[in-house]
Length: 61
Image (cartoon, rainbow, N blue to C red; front, side, top):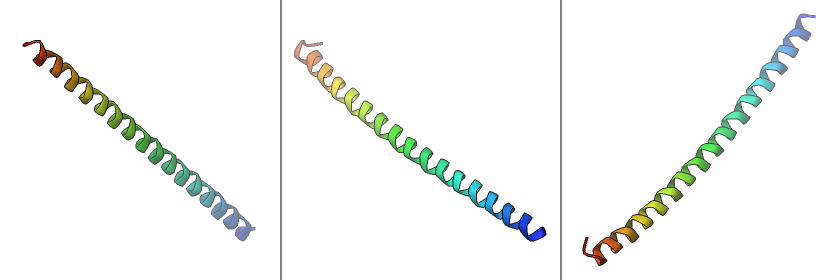
């Protein structure tokens, strides 16, 4: 009976660790995706700023 309980406990712990590892992988993927989105937005804003600066310079402002 004790060995059976120990076996079940180890199995539950192993399953719990696997679930945590999957959560970590999922969070890492989401973090990478968020970083890429922020970088893309920053590039878009930088390009827009450059365009607006050109317009200002062209119009002597």
